[in-house]
Amino acid sequence: MLNENIKALRKSKGLSQQELAVKLNVVRQTVSKWEQGLSVPDSDMLICLSEALETPTSALLGENIIVPEVDDLKAISAKLEVINLQLAQKKTTRQKLLHWFLIVLCIATAAVLAILLAIESPYLGWDYSNPETAVLGVAFHSFEWLFIRIAPLILIGAGIGIFLTQKKE
Image (cartoon, rainbow, N blue to C red; front, top):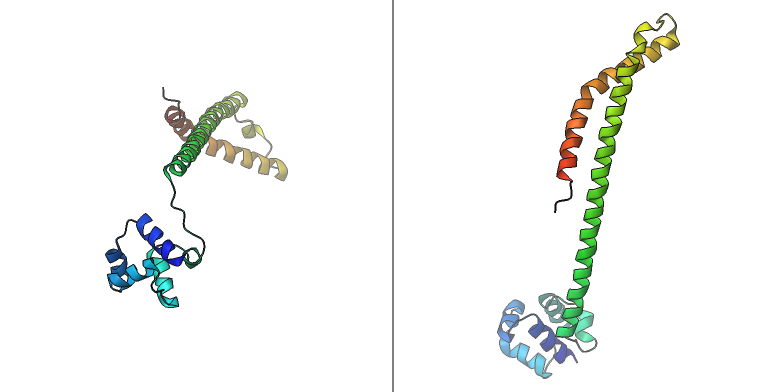
């Protein structure tokens, strides 16, 4: 069983007996004897062999290794194709969500700007001798001051984002 597994794994990795022997620092005849079942590697060499063949030691000692056939590769290929389609759909969905988020951001920014223009800075007429009104006036003024300076950047950035996330046909 070990001899068959060594041979099957070596061939599946595309290695000759000589190439495997070089990796393990042994002579080719040693690998040949292992594969013919005339001798077995010691425990240290078994670990080195599993590393060289990139497989667990238990697989070398266990059941016969089944090399995947063409049908198995077709099944794997079909599964990968399904996964790629799912990833593409996920990307498209994310792009649509981002596109609509940017549209809503533009509309909300324009609405806030329209509201600020319509109310014409009411905090200027407030009584600032009352501490509560003064704090509210300063907070409102700070929001308006900051929003008026950031809104153009938001609109430009969102507009560019909308353009870039448009569905291309």
